[in-house]
Structure formats: C-alpha cells, structure tokens
Length: 481
Image 1 (spheres, rainbow, N blue to C red):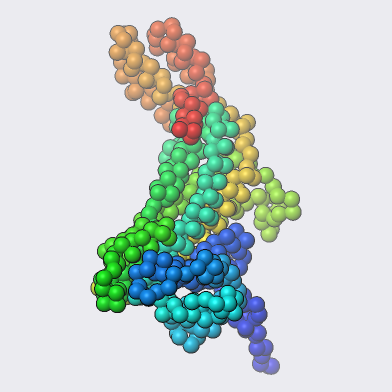
Image 2 (cartoon, one colour):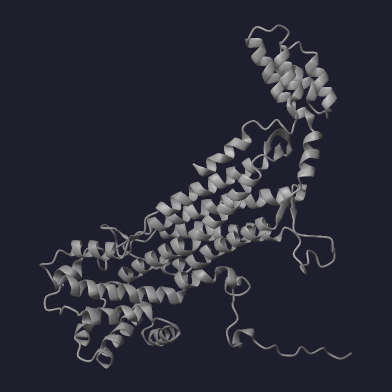
C-alpha cells in the first residue's frame, strides 16, 4: 500500500500584497473604510505628528520658552503641511525609523526633526532647524498619545460613526411614519396581545436609538500634557517662571479637547469608558431592532425583496434569508464585547503607569468597525423590506379575543358610573376568552348581552382588532419632537 504524501502548501502569510487577517480589513473593507482615516495605526501616527507640530507651534507662539524664535506664517504653514501631506511614503518612513528606535513616539519625534532640518531646502532662510529641541519638549510619550487618541476617536465618531447612525435612525423613522397607522397584532410573551401599529413599534426603537445618539454627541474628549507623572516636573525645572498649567490648558483646548488638570502619567481614560458604554448601549438597542425585524420576517409581517442573482441557500432555491439582520446581530455583539473590554480595562492603571492601555487602545478601530458594519447591514436590510398588509389583517381578524381588554375596561367604567350588572368584569372576560379563539360574532353576542348603555354597547360592537390601536398612530409624531 502506497503512503500518501501531502504536498507542501504555499504560506499565505508570504503573499504580496498582504492578506488581511481580520474580516474588517478583508471581506468587509468597503463598509468600514472611512474609519481607516481615523482609527488605523497610520492615522495614529499622523495624529501624533499633528500633536507634536501643534505643541511646537504653541511653544513658539506663546514665547513660553526663553529664546525660542517667533515663526513666520510660511514656517507655520510648512509645519502644518507635514501633517496635511502625511501619506504612504511617510508611513513607510516612520516604520523604518521605528525599527531602529523600537519606540513609536520617539520615531515620530525623529521624523519631525528630519522635516525641520530639511526646511531650508523648501523655505530658503528659516529658523526651523534651530527649534529641533522644542519637538517633544518636556513631554512623555503619553502626552502625545492621549491627545492623539482623543482627536482620532472624536473625529471618527463625529465624522463617520455618528453620521451613519443618524442616517440609520432617519431611515427607520421614515418607515415608522409611513406605517404609522398600519395595524399590527402585538405579541407579548409571544402571545397575541393588544394591537398596536407597525409604525409605532418602529418609532419606539428610533426614540431609544436617538436618545443614545444625543448622549454620544454630548460626550467629552479629555486631554492632558503635563509630563511623566502629571506634575509638570520637567517643565518647571526647565523654565521655572512660566505658568505651565495655563500653557497646558490653552494647548489642549486649542486642539478642541477638554483639559484634564489631574492625571498620573496617563490621562485617566474615563471619558473613553463613558463614550464606549454609550456606543455599546446604542449597539444593544440596534441589536434589539435586528432581532425584532428578523422575527417579523419569520412571521411574514415583512417580506424581503429578492435581489436579482442573489442566492439564499446553496440547496433550497426558494429561500430569501434575513442575512443583513443576522450579520448585524453578530457584529453588534463583537463590537459590544470590544467596547465593554475597552471601557473596563482603560479605567485602571497600576500606580502612575502601566502599558495595558497601549495595546488595548489599538482595538478601538475594530470596536467601531464592527458597529459601523452592523449599521450598514441594518440600513441595507431595512431598504429591502415590504409590508404584507393582508397578512396583518388576517392575523388581527383571527384574534378577536384581544378585545377582552377594552370590553372589561368599559364594564369597569360603567360600573363606576352606576350601571348595574357590571360585576366581576375581568373574571367574566377571562372566562370567555382565556385559551379560546373567538369570532367577531362571539364577541358581539357577548357584548350585546351585558346590558351596557346603548352608546357604550355600540362603540364596542363597532370595535375590531384592527381598529383597537388606541393612540398608536398619533404617538409616532413624537419622532418630530
């Protein structure tokens, strides 16, 4: 018997260009690509360069360091252009420097010093080479990193994630308004219950989501620049006469952040924990929408509009699977897992500093990426739905027992008004309806034999499950509050 030999496999790790390890940088890249400009490693390095440039400009602009020259408009523009033109070549150059320094922030310092030394070739006569030692002046790495992450996360949330989330809620709100008056048999505990409208149920979720979005939009982004243990120790020794707290505050606020005056070596990251908890809560409400819509599809309330050429099942050709909502569920769960870990890990730092936050924060991008992907899937899924109004009408007409609630409530009101024969209304309706399916005739016959005042009896006789929706349609208008 011949031994079977297995040929050596090509290592996919050696394929050029590199193959993505994770799905966000592979299969799902188009949906999350806008976050790359804010939350990738390259974006982190660009943000670091930005902070270092602005710190240099702040020091020279305030004259806080004796002897530091005042920069011309051309010199300031040159420095800011280093940030504006930061691209693939600069990413590669920084990586080359870091291979030597084995320190990411120190690599940024050397990168910027190279640009200062090269300034004469662009500007001619310039003082920029003479201010090289003001780059990273009195800073610890975390001074640069905390500000960089705050800027990155702020811009990712405000420029990418929030617009997508608002667009989602606006689209669901439009559906809610469209179906504000569409009667729907409610299910509580999975059992037929007081009817509502489809629009009102969608509006409930929109209202919940928007409340979280208001919290997220109002969240603060904190920053600090105060040295190795938050004491301004090096600052005071180097330049003892300066008001370093004011220099720090005005710099952080110049960046558009909230100044944190009391820190260890690190900014405490509490603002991040607050933000991620809010985003995770939004995720969980959206997850609730995804599971509810999935259930409505299963019931036939929503019909999925087939996509030409798409396959629902590899073996069952009739199927149109609710894959958008299932994909969203899974990605929301992944996002929440990462956000919960970020929120719980980042608020703790041993004594004055440990590095658990360093690698943890590198997962902010995936946390938002999975959420953004889910938002995209829900939006796509919701756009491919239509409502089976005939099915909804049939469901309601098959459940006349849900009118037991208004009938017994009307009996209670009549009893209070002095009408005789209204004793034990709840118990009488319970006996009539519990565990039974009633027809319209059954319910009307029962109402007719109660001895209710004529106007009340008429009102109840005219009531149907489809018209028993209370103020549901009107409540949708609260979306415009």
